[in-house]
Image 1 (tube, rainbow, N blue to C red):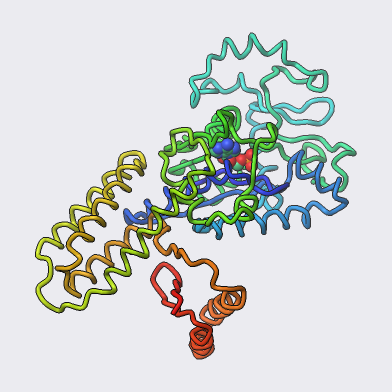
Image 2: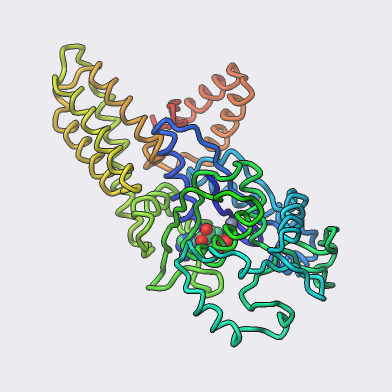
Length: 442
Ligand code: AMP
Ligand code: ZN
């Protein structure tokens, strides 16, 4: 699976994160289903905006984009989004893009202008626009009016740049290619990096609906003209996150970042839940007043697990539990099987939890074990059940928890146990679960 990733010239806004949470749900569900998955997400670290803003900041392109890439990865962690297997950076794959452009030139699908730009010739690809049912006669009619003076040497106004000839505005951002010095266009990045890691055709390509045209339309044109095979088997596009009826976007200025919301003390999982719970092909009207409703929903999880913790009976327990769990897991899966119908799956989860709550007095320890197993499995898809309402465990404990995670990563378990004891002396008990560490105040 290939997902169009961020352009790292600024912090991602919440609309962007809707897209990454959708990718994460798809990713986790494919794994839940038992598929082997390689998830690639590109990092656009060279384009007009990264060059413009790094120059304005007086920084090298690399150190400038590194900073925003780090911030982006922090955001993914905050939202409990699993890391893709491969995060290729455009600037580390320029040679592949050059090869692809050379092939397109050789095959007559591209041409070089006097200025030294290389354009893709859309009339050379009969299927151009198939993804969006493009009416090409209209496109060509409109074209003349839109031709800008700096694009006068294109054959057709809709031809798009594969390579941009060096311009002094680009500073030291330049690569040598057989067809001249310059830098790649945006669309060619994704064609080059997706097939580099996934082959052609590959299974799933995702992105927001705004990318269907021209970005994904152009990716298809480039890749299918360079290699005589289908590019992608399935396309999945998420709808927009909107604010007051308008698409959240940097250019409109109606955006906020994850950091903006965390500063207002919204819980990261309440934000994740907000982005997760609406079907990906529906518009999502982001409302801050949903955050407290989401918290109420999330609080059901620690309550539920605490109730299970209280079960001590070793008796026969509630007989139908096994059947009830099977029914739950089946309906949870059936919901998401239906084009990721998350509402249906969440409904089956909450119905299950309320049935179990009702029978809590009749449960046995063995029942609880089975119930927990099912919940862990489902949370591998949702990633929200480790919610902890008590966030104010203090800076000191939080930093000790991080230190302990580090020790565990280094397999220094003696040190990790020592830190756990220290934390307990501060009044907080840690518990390691398959989904990460949780805590409670004692
Ligand atoms: P960008 O960094 O602008 O290339 O966008 C990264 C991803 O976020 C793309 O897949 C976009 O389609 C998606 N995206 C941008 N704005 C929104 C929005 N308001 N709602 C949902 N997805 C968006
Ligand atoms: Zn892309």
